[in-house]
Length: 228
Image (cartoon, rainbow, N blue to C red; front, side, top):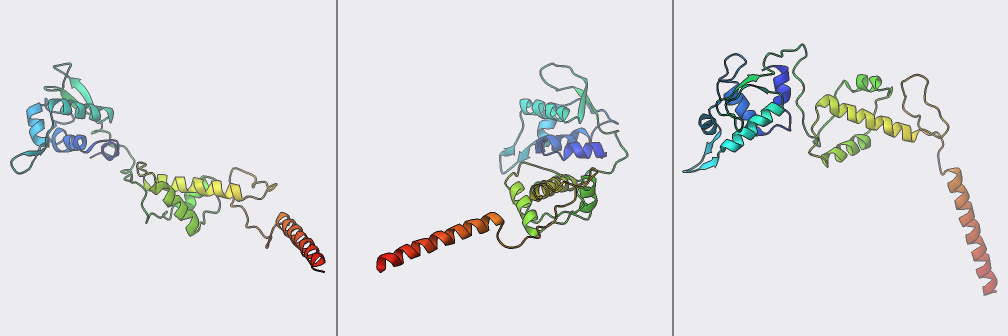
C-alpha cells in the first residue's frame, strides 16, 4: 500500500463498506493498477454479512454505485470505461493512488482527542517554529485543551496536528497574559509573558478595600452616637 492510499483509506470521511470494497475486492483482484470489470452480483456477495439464516448486512445495486462514487471522490478510483451511464456494472477503473509511491513516510493515523493524550518530544521544536520560545505548560493548560476537544469527537487529527493546535492555544494564552504596555520581543518569535512580580491585591482592589473600611467606620460611629 502506498502512502497516498493509506492516507485516503484512513480518512474518517470514508465509510467502512467503501474501504472494504477497495481493499478486499477491487485492489486485491486488480491487474496492475486497473480493476477487473465490476461484477455487481459478485461484489454484493463479497460485502454481504450472513447471520443465522439471514443476512445481517447486504448491499443493493444502488448501494454499490454509491460506494464506487465514494471511492472516486476520495481519489482512490478513476473511471477508465463504463458500459452504462446509470451504474458501474461492467465498468473498469484505474487505481489512481496505487503507483504514487512518494518520498514521504506513511502519515500518522488521525484520531479523536482522548483523556490520556500528551504532546511528544517534538513539541518544543514545533513551538519555536510557530514563534513560541517557551513551550512549558502546566496541568491546567493541558487539561483545558483536552476537555475542549473531548467535546468535539467529530474532529480527527494526527499527533502533529493536535500539537499544533495546542501550541496555538498556548500562544493565545500567553498573549492574553502579557501586561498592558509590554511589547513582545523583536523578530517573529514570541516568548512567554513573564510572570507578574506584584504580590497581593492590585491598586484598584486596595482602593476599594479602603473605601469599604471607611464606610464601615462611619456606620459604626453613627451607630455609637445613637446609642449614647
